[in-house]
Length: 500
Ligand code: ATP
Image 1 (cartoon, rainbow, N blue to C red):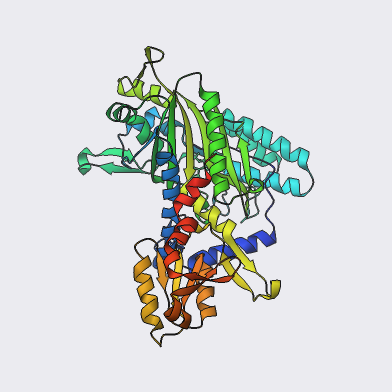
Image 2: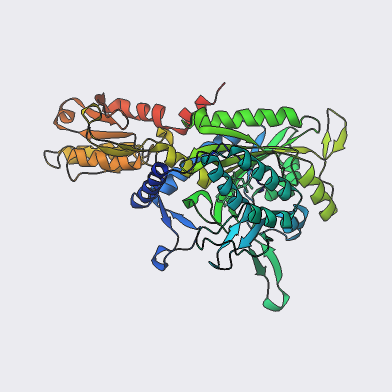
């Protein structure tokens, strides 16, 4: 859940990274990854659709996460719970009272802002002007106001730092107010309807099913329950493309433990999750582990895993030590025991929880940002090219199959190869335009291999296989291709990297 996590080590936006980010957004749309939602009606703010390559990339990330949780760990099982839940769930979880952002309106531009983001942006400007001490003071004061829900303190900060609306350039602000981020809707007949909420996180579906899972699958503590699913938040500040959406997907795992072991398991999951990012080719320089100073109402300790986006280091995943906050609150509101009988301790207790909570859409954006390469002309004699250097196992298409020319029986041979490989891998077949153009099109979507069937293929059953990153072409026997592609492009090859 949201807490202010202001930090001053964010790289300040500069023109170069703005230009890069704009080019990335344009590329994501033009190449079939991500489109604005209902675009023919000019879109819906902060809602996006995934195109054919976007959905394939997203599913691959999902599968890698799911398998690394539920397949590599005997003590983690999966679940898929409903988006709509009993409304009391959100009272117990604290979302009805506490899931709010302090917002302020500018009377002249009629625009609404999240106060913490306005103040953070101002602090970043101060850092840029070499006024680091003032910036630190601003952030410290803001954190203290947020922690104590001191809204008039936030009003004063806006005034004393003379913060103006980026649009109207005036400081004509309304008083700061709290806004709840949950979407509500009605279920049932109109005159007898109940207000329910679209879940703002998937975690509560896990907590309310804790006993169902523990008893029916006979899980023993420590154990985890993993879930991937949609979550909804009425984000007021919708910027930075798919980084902040109103409808998004989370990949969450709640790990139930003996009270008193939370420090050890918190450290374990922090390390484990960082290693997961490394297998995606994200180097440690591009990751920041940011501890929360101000903790959400449920947390005893929390860190964000942040990635160096073009707009600064920003959270992609949170790791939270949630104590028994959620389970004991559900016990209280539901008037039912959610306890575990520990055969080791020979007594029952409400377990403690460590949570890992990643945003799938943010991971996709992270991977696209990390992979998008615009190479200039001349580098080692190559022409300029744009390509996506995605980890091979996550690439939407694993290999493209081309006949060198359509005649001389090459097309039939290439289609035969396509039919042979399609049961194992997502492929593309392309027979038109020059080989160079066909390579370039595959580079744009990050296809690791292009396989060309040529005249020699008819003689000795070999093909050329061109690798995306070094562009080197080798000959390979058709008989070896399945094994080769499995070893380089399967999710298994990523899972193996997680072995210690
Ligand atoms: P932020 O402070 O950036 O709004 P948060 O601290 O509210 O994030 P959590 O409640 O910890 O986020 O949610 C867990 C993960 O869900 C986040 O790390 C992020 O990857 C993802 N997430 C949260 N809100 C959004 C959103 N509006 N759009 C896309 N992903 C989101």
